[in-house]
Length: 521
Image (cartoon, rainbow, N blue to C red; front, top):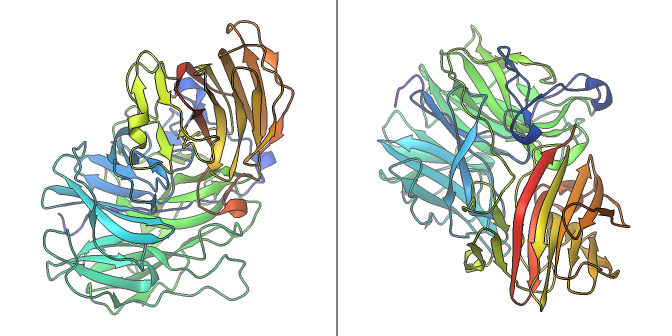
């Protein structure tokens, strides 16, 4: 790896907008199925570069290619890897993690000596650690997870020191040396850095130093760290910087800290922080990080791109401003496809790239097969004990329509799913509809359609409605609407987003056919 351009890692948190959401009226370009697309087609782009729940981006520059992945939390297959050649247009290529190891947080994707590695912090309620998987081809196959036995830390950041040794920088200003193969630790965890502290009168969630990412440029190592807490007050999360001429320190905090922060709840992007530096195709420099969209905690933290410039004192500053307005695209890149189509005829598997089970049991994938339909073996009694298949919605307003056929002894339906305790939706059995709201059953009105019907769920900026049809032509509006703006992390914790989902409970097999996704204006 080049001393100047050492790969780039992850980020996490988004940028700010000077106008309140009601006045900003962003003019995204519409791409696949009407989804908003960052590339405006005129040499500019409008954040987010990857919409929807894509937090903690870890980014790798690999020649003229860029690869990025995100925290996938409880979704499996997980750790989906995305590809770009211009930093603006991104498409998913594979899911690297198949084996459940817990809720996956901020990873680190790197290439070292020709091999790819992903360092993955994951936690169950009673067990947590940092794992590593590796592959000789970015598209896989990826190895099974290897436990590094680091239960007390999250957010690894990989670095190679001037001594040629490999290190993982960890939350809280700590660090551990790795063996040369990167597959185990080589010594104890040690404290190496005391991060810069913000003024006491700022409204933040908590100090919480996390997400350390190391970039080597010239004679300096730069450590980019997130502090302030990742949610809570919109003004909490931020990006701070320190540097050292040696991987062993001492680390000097930047006199201009924080280099990125949301300063007002009126901005377009809240809780911006958790950044990584990356060199653009033509040698200019950028940060990727994440942020909550003003008024849309339910979409999760979305991936943002911010230009930076190196200053004469050897530090850098962010140039993008509030990020609510179009910015010039990185120079020299080649645009490629962006996003993916969510509509699914289920003739081939899109597990991992689109679909993932929420908090699955080890045998969950055995419940799924494809036979010109998604065939899902029923389990449990309700979404709380029947892990649904979910996908990440990138839009503020959208419809999802699907044909559902239930088994004689079961039920199935469509949801907006946050976690096992917080979801809403509509399902049915042979005789009754089942309405779900706040994570509980709310009613069982009569079902006149029998074991097969088509359901349309519309989420129009948190107002949720359902329509049902026995034949896909004649539609009836279901007599219960919902408001879901509170289905998010600051209510439930967990750092996730509200996702469209399909589930099947009881016994037998449910069949889902012809799913259609439409983004709405």
